[in-house]
Image (tube, rainbow, N blue to C red; front, side, top):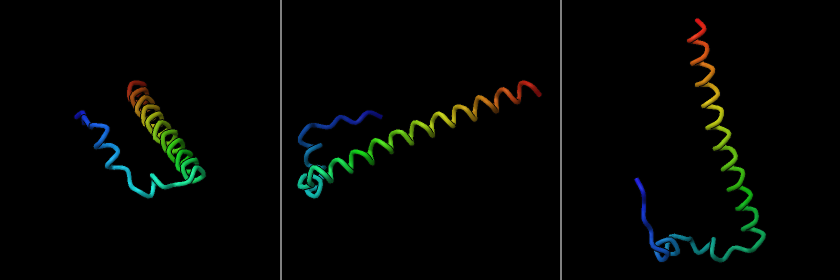
Length: 61
């Protein structure tokens, strides 16, 4: 389901602690986000590999 948000709704949803964060804090937060994205992509790739392996094992049986 697509969610259409206005810019104002997005800004209103940003906590004040994030708005007042230092550059260093934001850089650390960005690193966490980047690693989380990598982890999610790796998890999806692992799921695909397992599914493909399972499918090919069943076909060989």
